[in-house]
Length: 180
Image (tube, rainbow, N blue to C red; front, top):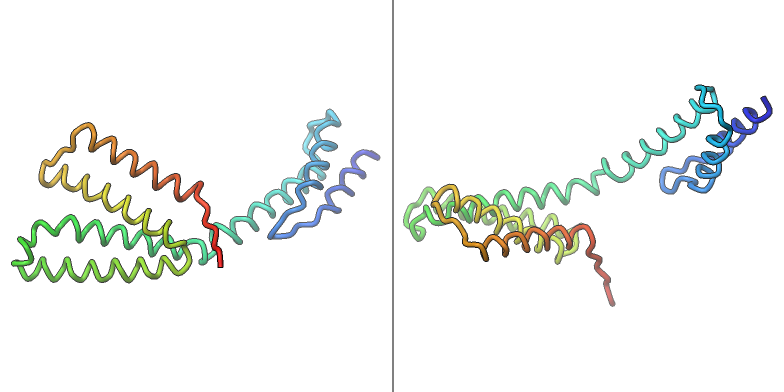
């Protein structure tokens, strides 16, 4: 009974902060909680699960579902889609001799630049343009394969794989340092 009271006290002493959860308190609680040898479902375990759930919900709410996180990437995705569309249909304009397609390509390019500028307001310029360029090149190449039967050779495919790997590396592992 005394161990249960001690565990309940440990649970109540954990402070939940939405920005930085008290990880050391959670780890000490986990070590004392699971070293007891009893795995029956108790009130203390239920409270611990509630605390973990609150921390997870706060993390999701603060970081993943915040507008500051998603909106710039939605702008970037829009730029990639519009840029891929306009570049894919550029050959169909016949050197801008077909007015309807030429107008459509011009409007989508202007919208692409607009969405890129909106994305660059929050995402570093290098990351934004590297992602836009890499994904647009890949999408246009795939469009060329299906529409015009323009299949790249081995070196072209290797180059596309390098482009995709480069986009992943820049976005997931790249860091920008600003020197003033």
